[in-house]
Length: 204
Length: 170
Image 1 (cartoon, each protein chain N blue to C red):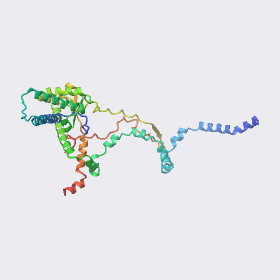
Image 2 (cartoon, helix red, strand yellow; image 1 turned 30 degrees about the horizontal axis):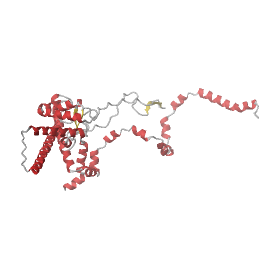
Image 3 (cartoon, one colour; image 1 turned 90 degrees about the horizontal axis):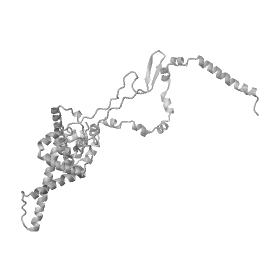
Image 4 (spheres, rainbow over the protein chains, first blue to last red; image 1 turned 120 degrees about the vertical axis):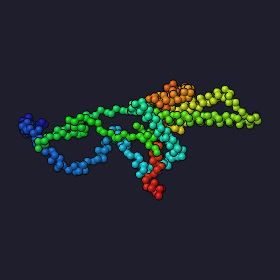
């Protein structure tokens, strides 16, 4: 049996009163003004991030990360090019392993004579380029199928989300999640130094 | 510049030395073949084998042998013995492998280049892709086919760690 209408109205009355009061109060408050008076730096300093991180199940988070997708964005060539292989080989036993696996009298002789002739090639090419006043960079290194043309650098990334904060002392600043600040011109991230090839391929 | 050198246009010195090696190897093999034939002839007939060097037949045989030597090797692997020693390889001007027809054309044009070897070499040095007359005729190019960086790493590896060198020298 449904209660009489007057009873249902009385039941809903406190709810309606509260809603009305809250709306009236919120209309009267300038939330932006309140936020501007909050010292977010002080708030952040009071947060114990270590405790927050302790409560996060990183394994659970990592299980949801697509590492393949993540690695697609990583330039492994740039990372590997920064590794000093010469230093690595000289300081580790890796060098002797390679020597044992690849060394032979014939191989050594071939490496030596090839490096000599390549050194001669480079010398002659330089001389010809000087005589012809032809910049070496203007020459193609090899056939297009074997040596693809050098790629043009990708366009600079637009700045990501910018959060304007007005702190309590009146100063303001822009926090960017990543990328260059909005006022400064976009710059390309400096890449690793290009390897410089010795004239004879680095052989003695 | 790429340190591997693989796929880059080969220079004149490497190419010239490799050609010299190939001519030496092919003529050496030809002479060895003639000597072997002479030995066989003497064993079978009992007569002394005296090849007439003025005979046109020997010249034609030499030309056929040279054609086979270069054509077969270029069409099968893109390089001759001399080119393999010096780490070179023949490819099409785009960089693809070459076929039998291209190899034959290149070999025939090579003989023309050998007749005019000095101007052909000078022109190849000036040419932007260092392609000689026979390359231009056959639509080919010669590239490096060896890993210079790998060679350098092998050389470094043979030197060993610094403490090993110090121990060895003392």
